[in-house]
Length: 195
Length: 195
DNA sequence: GTCTATATGGCGATAGAC
DNA sequence: GTCTATCGCCATATAGAC
Image (cartoon, rainbow over all chains, first blue to last red; front, top):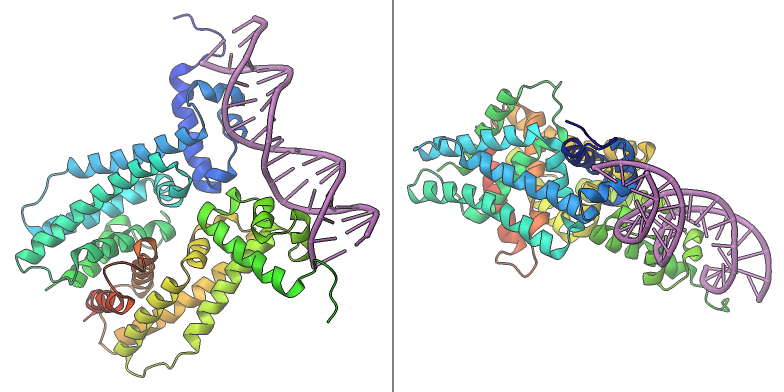
């Protein structure tokens, strides 16, 4: 198929997002320029605007995509009937998912304040939806007497904060495998909410 | 005492740091300009350089001061003999200290990547020192059979991540008092490391 | 779809008058 | 100690040629 010289519509778009993800995660949204992204992609700065209306939209697209992936991945898992097993599954899922995409996780936690209010509201709503899935597990378990937590809302946030913390220090070459990490964290979470 | 017109050496320095703290926490280091800081302080941009050699030093001073305050405050507390009481004290201290200065906490976690490598190393060392204080508690408790944690290093990071998480959602006008929060988190931490 | 060129404005930091 | 003025540079985004 004949192609205009230098034209790569199917390649350049994803490349731009991949480069932006990497650069935003490393240096921060505000510290990265469109020229820097263009240089890394291998085009001139003006060409970026064929793919994104502006820099803000580039950030929003990355964060929205990450949250959609997170919710889709969780909702498409087999959901154990047993409530303890369901909590264990959540812990394992959260750790594995977050360790697989550290850059997207980093951006989604650090760059919230660089979103416009409208975009922030969208991401915030998705994040709350994810938290709600864990809170439902804790509430059900408490109702049936398996879990004992003074406040399911706080317990939800506490567990998620604890689990997400792994992304700040985990290195693939490290002492523990992901499976071992999942087990260590599961024991701590299990005990922290146990009756 | 006679004073040169417009000269305020004892006031301007602290004012600059207070304004920078506020603006860095709200918008991020990279997104805040020296002109913005100067405008908020009420001086011209050039005058800032009587107090700081550059923007980087302003950030480092804020972060270093925060870490020094944290370690001083912790080390100047009465330290309970009982190991469980010592862990409970750590939990209460960490929550109270962090909730009292949300902006400094925010900067210290979010702006690490905007430090020069030399400055980063200094902050990192202080942070490790703080973590070490908790790890010592967990190790002693495990040795005496009071705590059961598979890995004191991971347990340390997990507990700190969980506790620091309160700063991302706590609002002074909220449903729970700081004392109630301390109690809720203490119950979760206590159980998570219990034998 | 990508290029070059440019409009428009802000940046960190410094010099020298007062 | 603060001011005004400025250096040299980079920013986002757009226009129009190819």
